[in-house]
Image (cartoon, rainbow, N blue to C red; front, side, top):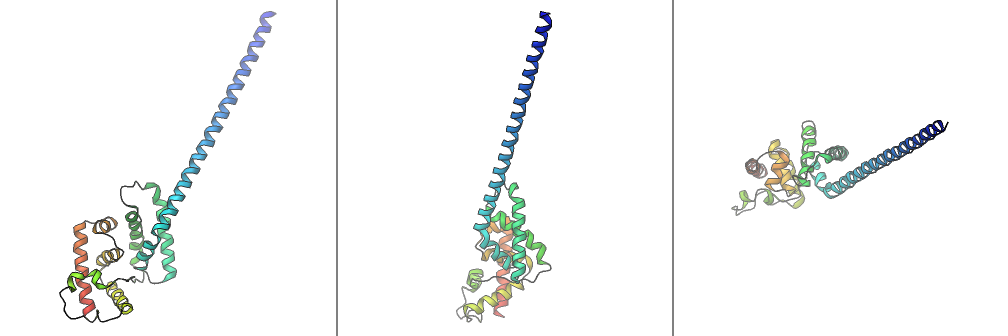
Length: 213
């Protein structure tokens, strides 16, 4: 009899222990799930914060580049949204092995390279030709027809001339007008700095001929 009672009590204790262990396991799993959700939430938040910071800091750059390839404001906005979406998607893959500016500009270049074949293109040209082809003009003693124009007319003429360049020359000129270095332009276009120099020099020469004709 005593043995039977002891057996029942032992089984009840085992049941309690098992139930307690199950409860502890369930709590642990719930805790892990909550922590996982919190980590995911923090990651998304960090992703969103980084994206917002990048787009705020580089919005002007992106809009200048986009304006350089598309004249219509409505399409410019569409392209900006497309670039922003691509930046959002590419952000988790960024390993900080290049400057954020060149990373974003490269994404914009890829979007615009697809668009450029069918888009109406223009160039935001708010700099004087001397910033682009200084070497070609520095020895001229008399002002050229282009130099005789006022600032607004120069911008219009320069924009028209850049639209007549070959695409590879237009790309380097547009990025150079945004203040990018040879190295940055090379990273954006995935070419060597030497090739950037060659294309830029050819673009300068072509621009000078177009503007002086």
